[in-house]
Image 1: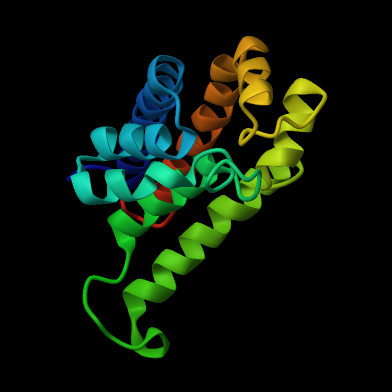
Image 2: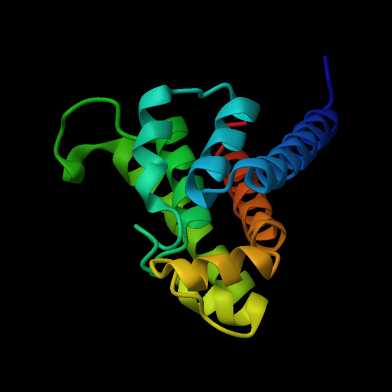
Amino acid sequence: MVPKAFNWLKKLTLEHELAEKAEALAEELHKNYGGCAQMTLKALQKVLGLEDQGSFKAASALSGGVTLAGEVCGALLGAIMAIGLAMGRSKLEPTSSSAEYSRAMEAAKKVFDQFKEEFGSVRCRDIHVKLFGRYYDLRNQEEWRQFVESGARAKCGYVCRVAARLAIETLNSFGYI
């Protein structure tokens, strides 16, 4: 019989290993390809064995704060999509009677709240100000160029890294891992 303390330690070690892999992969993918929502989601999909081309494609227009509009951070949205893939409602049923829906919503709220605490906001434009000292209008070609030249892939890669870690930690706390 394995002592409970050993199981807890084993689970904590697995969470740490998965978090490290997801963080590093999210950052690397963003550095190489860009697109914070897709790269955060892809890293989590790979690490958790949740690969799904449909959801990856669906995340295409979520980067840059949804359609490059500076609204909700794409990295956060990618992490929340991974939560949904892992724990979400799997059949058509009312939200009021779906345990999967309720559980996924609680997990996603936890990621959202922790992300907001980490960056002071969930808005891409606010995170820009924190990371770059200004907001870049990513729909404007000249500002997009300046954004890329300012080191955006590395700095936003860090945001992807944090979002991936929060998703792994939350999935573990909800017993998914």
